[in-house]
Image (cartoon, rainbow, N blue to C red; front, side):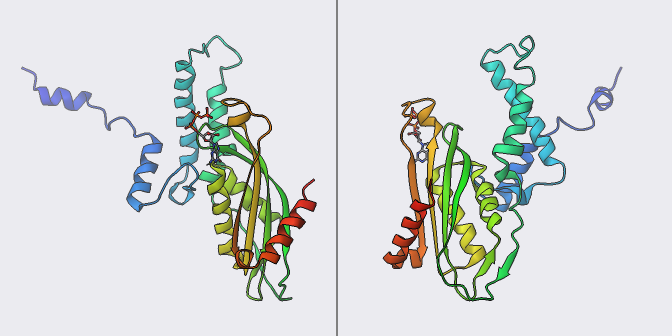
Length: 243
Ligand SMILES: Nc1nc2c(ncn2[C@@H]2O[C@H](COP(=O)(O)OP(=O)(O)OP(=O)(O)O)[C@@H](O)[C@H]2O)c(=O)[nH]1
């Protein structure tokens, strides 16, 4: 008579089905207590090769979404590769700010002890809302009041940092605060101001279908909060630099 356990041992696969890469990343995030909301960056826990595996997993799951939408991706030449394209777009392009580390920012000491208002903008914003994953297209202005011990960063780095923060599913109120936090930590200025105005396509393309409304919000820190003259100067100079 056959020993049942020997048969099982012979036919048993070496290991169980592989865990989806998203689950092992999630387990690491939970273990380290790191938040992983839609607009959080999770690059610190990613390991070599995981981004590629994540792209494959998103493509597989996206294929499931297309099937659930009853689209014949086998016969329809237009959608045959759509799941892969969307996965690449999410992971490498429009949500890259979740998966890529922060851009390298070269900082320079403020040797001339600059302490005058500096404004950068409009910086183009391309993002997506966390609620519907519809595009958010807008502009950001940044005002900095440095002090003698502030670090200065290159002009292009304001745009790089903005892109990194915005290339995630966002809501505008949180996006401006995140951007202000990053800038403040790096520059350590006396004052920092961020203004964002944006079109939300979840309102234009669908839902209420209101084409006109634009959302504007701001964050004022330090001297911009306490000195109304400085705040006024920033807001009026921003207006002249708008169009
Ligand atoms: N406060 C805020 N709201 C946003 C932002 N982006 C999108 N929204 C809004 O988020 C809301 C989501 O509302 P829900 O009522 O849960 O979703 P819904 O039923 O699809 O809403 P409708 O858009 O009214 O059809 C909508 O009112 C959007 O206009 C943002 O950056 N900030």
